[in-house]
Length: 483
Image 1 (cartoon, rainbow, N blue to C red):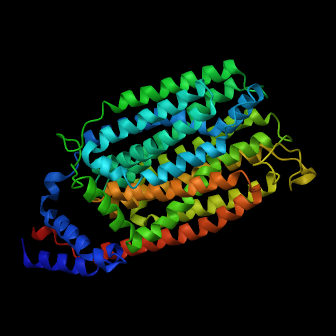
Image 2: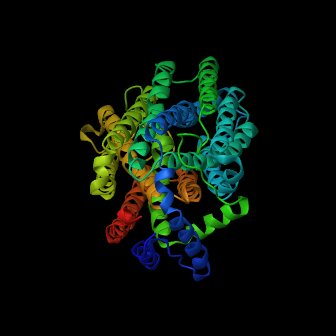
Image 3: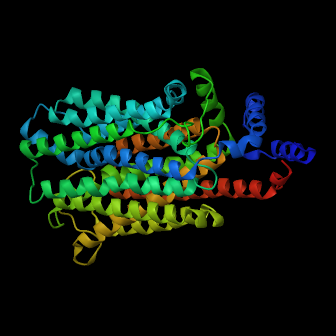
């Protein structure tokens, strides 16, 4: 090991503005962690991910999540519509789809502080499996619609969501390196979001021509979705443990207490606070397109067959997500050369155009009740085509943000990926819960105004972190040849 190498490490420590805690008491902890990370840099070649096998594992990981979230995302998008039908048959049922989703994301946000501790002793594979089981239980609960079952399983799946997503982020990072993280993130995201397509095709045909979703239809739908979720959990059992032969890197969070301590310390860093603004926006727009927008379409009586349009909307959101994830995955090695910020800026422009079209196309009362009010389009007639085009734009813009968030977290925090992804999901789910709470009282135009404001703030903050990371990479001297 040469003096020049040691000197570059020293300069890196002095220049690490992106990981310098804002509270001085944590600086020694982070300097020690960075030093340990740099000390192991000489073993990079021996730890490098074995690309062919690891890429196959990424495909299996994507298949697991595709199955589980085919069930859950389909359930989320039709939840309020189904609950309205249940209430028509059983006046004693007082559950609310909005409140259920708000509870899910509130518990999700809270439990994300504990999920790195669970990850530290379960490992990413079994953390994901335990989380996946809660998804199957939640969906099966709709076979026996009771208010207490709805809210109890909402709490359960909120905790499970923190487990499955923290484990997934850690697993994806351990199976990737600096050259493959963008590609793997994009491919995983495309496979995950194909769940929006498959599940909604099924619901589209099941709900065809029905204003009321009867008991038989609900039973068939939820039995199928539960089976699909169980299949996803079964596929997850096939995943190898990270660090096994040819299967990525191993990870050590240092025990449950140290994992929790790392999460708090990481959250106080400058870059993580800036990225949290981006995370916050992705939570708001997630809740908007997964719950609020489908309710808006269902409640717009001037649209042709609005209940059927909910399924079509979900399919178009899925198509946008798949296109974005696929493009950024296939061309990840090329797009990363130009930075992540152009893709995020593309997502911002797409979403702003989308919000404006929704403003013109749908009446303001649609998140709250069925209405035949006119839109701002000629003749006051909302357009099915514009509604579905907006669904596609929502999905494509969302993929722009999320694929680049996965990429930047895996790149900037390779040795703290568990806590980093837990903080991402904490902030995202916190804002999603807030959106579902205010969804039951705010009209559509207020939703759109909130989305525009946080889209702007989140995009600017992401670009600030990306630019700083790019400067730090360029400032580091190339010393690999001296090892």
